Length: 106
Image (cartoon, rainbow, N blue to C red; front, side):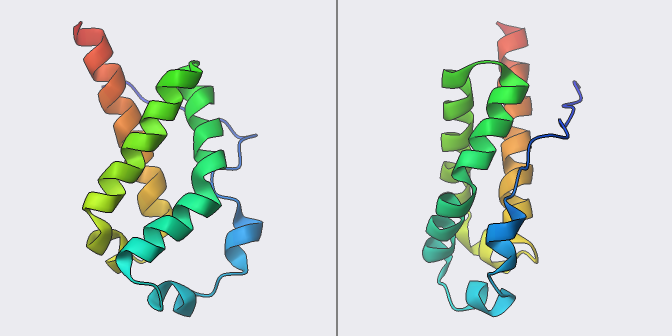
């Protein structure tokens, strides 16, 4: 399995934006609202990360889109996780790994 190296300069989760959001604000959102909230806060940073790893803008956009599709279909799990932004980021990494695996098998 290929290791995906994280590039230091990319701020995956914009912590300055998310630090202002208290944990109880996450609790007050239903699962779908939480996914929408995380999409708004994280999309651009996730896309930057995916572009840096994949070196392809369209492939990166697909990876981020797939990440949020997985999140929507697992909205309850995202809501129940201790760190929903981390859940989203981990899912992106898994989506990228799976994409690279599929590309190698072609």
